[in-house]
Each structure stands twice: as C-alpha cells, then as structure tokens.
Image (cartoon, rainbow, N blue to C red; front, side, top):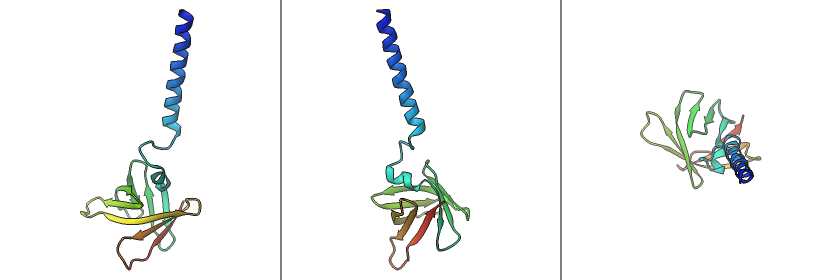
Length: 117
C-alpha cells in the first residue's frame, strides 16, 4: 500500500512539473498562433517608424503612441489611448513571418510593410 502511494505521488508531481513547464516555455496560451507572429518590434520599410506588439495585447511606437491591439479574422484593430476610434487594417505575413503588411481598410491608402527586428 505504501509503495502504491509513493508511485501515485511521483506521477502526480511529474504531471504538475510538466504542466508548469508548459506554461513557462510555450508562447502565451491566451494569444492565438497568428497573434504570436505579431509579438515583437517591427520597422516600417517606408518611413522611420517602429511599432512593438506585446503579448499582453498592448503596443507602443517610437513616436510615443500607446494602446491595445487585437485580431479578428485577418484584421488587426489598434485602439490608441486617448483616441476614440480604433484603427483597423487587413494584414498578411510573408518571408517566414519576418515581413508584415498592413492594408488599410480605407480605399486609396497604400499598404505599409514592416520587417521584424
């Protein structure tokens, strides 16, 4: 009986260790796979502009703009702090997810291309 209890205890500890290790070493479990691609700093190839997407769904830019971000079916929505309207862009990844293209939902606005830093 004592031997069985020890074996069950060892198995329970192993399961707990694996679960904790998974939480620490796997990407944020509350962010989708597509959203994981955004996380990091991106530089525009057109102008001197950087944007950093954080895993807690916040972003910052080199010009001091901050806010939150979310994705929804191929669209990224940027909600800027102190700005009442969100900005929505279609997006696509290329070059092994090292290039990000934002396509404005508004017509006539050219796409903005970013490279991951």
